Length: 218
Image (cartoon, rainbow, N blue to C red; front, side):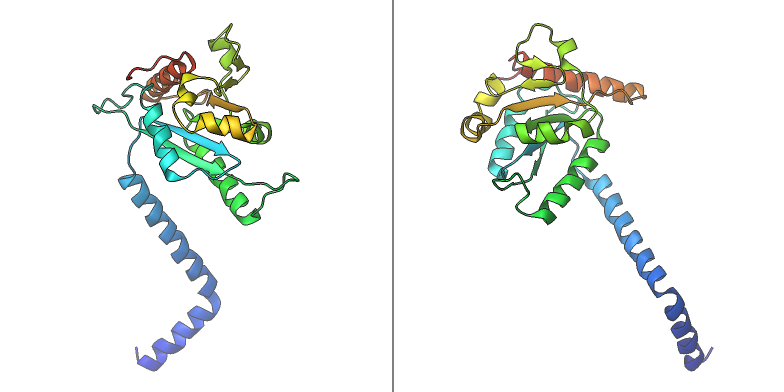
C-alpha cells in the first residue's frame, strides 16, 4: 500500500469513525484506571462515609479514622485494624441551596458510588444529609439491635453525646453547627457469599462497640 492510499483510507476511516474511536479510547482509559485502582487500592477493615454540610480537612478525617480503629476488630485478620473515612460534603447557602452546584453534583455521584460499592458501609450524617439522602441508602434498623437505647431510633443512632464523638472533631461540630449527628450502617440484605456475610458481622460488631461505648483499644 502506498503512502497516498494509506492516507486516503485513514482520512475515510477518520471521517466516519472519529467519535467512535475517541469514545473507545476513553472507555479503555477508564478501564485501565479502574483496574489499576482495584489492584493497588489499600484494603481496609471497614469504611465510614462521612456526610457533612461543611468541609472537613484531612487532619480531622485522619483523627476520626484513628478514633474509629479503637472500636473495630481486625476484620481481614492481617494483624492490624485500618478504617477508611470517606468525606462527602455539600456546602449550602442560607436558603439551603448548594453554594457550588458542580461540586455538589460531583459529591452526590461520589456518595451514590460509595453506597452501592459496599453493603457493609458505616455512615455518619449531619442533620441536613440525614433528612435529604438517607432514603437512597439501604440502612439497617438499629432499633431492633439496641432496644431501650434512647439514642437509637429506627435506622439512626445519635452520636453527638457518645464517647466516640467526644474524642474527635464531631463534638465541636455537634456544638457549633446546631445539627444533630447520626450514624447508621447498611443492612447487608443483598450479601450472599459466606465470607462477605462474616465480614458484615465483624463490621457490625465494631459499630455496636461504638454504640455501646465499648472501645477495644484505649
